[in-house]
Image 1 (spheres, one colour):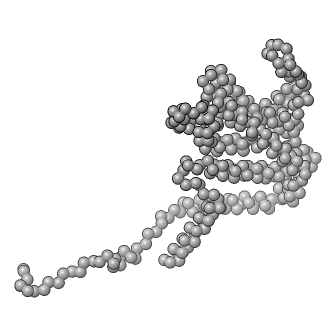
Image 2 (cartoon, rainbow, N blue to C red):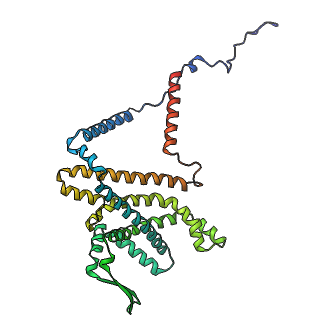
Image 3 (cartoon, one colour):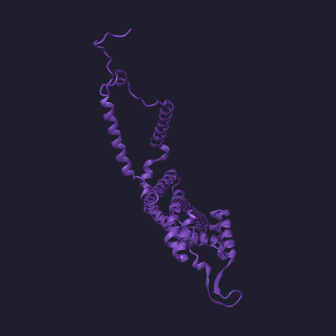
Length: 326
């Protein structure tokens, strides 16, 4: 039925954007509840609390004796020997690993075969066997000489006077470390994109310059994390030099444990804490070295622990404000 001419027709009001429906304003987006995560967190916290409580309250650990031994001169002297052996072996092992990796990547079949055989042999023989063999090396070769092969010797020297306990420990650890470092370095070099090699060759750069300034700096991003793991293993592996009569950190604690049998557990805890400190320091250095070499490879550098703490506190304050405003 049509309206008469001139009549006014009332049209329904169109909804405006400035006034949203009340049903929408009353709704709130809630995060998905995850009860399993909260249960797992509670169980882990309970287990950690029980472990810490037992560690602190159990009289078997003798924490008073631990504090007595922790900074004793005997322990600190052994710690110094551990640091010396680890430092020398790390440097010599890395240098040997680089040379072995380059030999393995060489076009010479002799160099490749010798490098592969060396890595295969020292990765197969336990470190303790290498150390004991070197410690008794003078029984096999009383004198060592340098000269023409199968000919006269220019000079010779007594092996027993040269191979001190420190030398035996450093040489044994370095030989073993070089075998593992070689594979770490070789893997890092192979991780560099082949286009980098081709671009450097197209520019006519010498092979040595290509390796030092283009290939190796990029390979370090892959080498450093893996080699630091090897370095941590090397620090712990220094405890075996006690078997070649070198009183490192573990050897000093073992000797004191023989003299004071009632303090064996506190002494072992002293050694444990010192190794935890050493490996933690190496891990911190690893983080900042990785962060340095990550420049140019990532859009933004990974945040430092202090930056993570600041970000976490800022996010927590912002969340508290949002919760209070609701």
